[in-house]
Image (cartoon, rainbow, N blue to C red; front, side, top):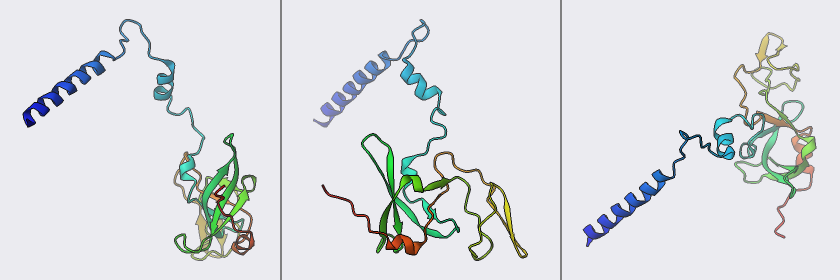
Length: 177
């Protein structure tokens, strides 16, 4: 009985494989594949400069003083696909006790360059502007990382508020309606 099912399975596989091979496009006779297939396979950089939405979740958020104030939990968009708000998680430990706040998307700035630290402890001094610049505090020198930024998502986000100001904002709750 098992041999009968095995032979039937092999025959069905061979039949399906022959149908698949029969559908290969013949480019020798001048037939061209559809333009939709060529666009997606021959132009891999057609979306160059766009960011992956899946990589935005968990992105660190800093304020103008380079202090970490939270991370992006979600992005809210309208029905036409425009992002309207960014949900930032403030405080808590591993998501427990985290205070969620929604801030307007226009108020959040995304930065490709890594955060510039001013030594072993962050003194709150602002780094010099520009990529690759260095800041000198006494004898300690710090420069931004020379590694190439990822083209598919930014390094971090900047929102001008302190942790205390964000915690004082009304908590964002997902509506069930």
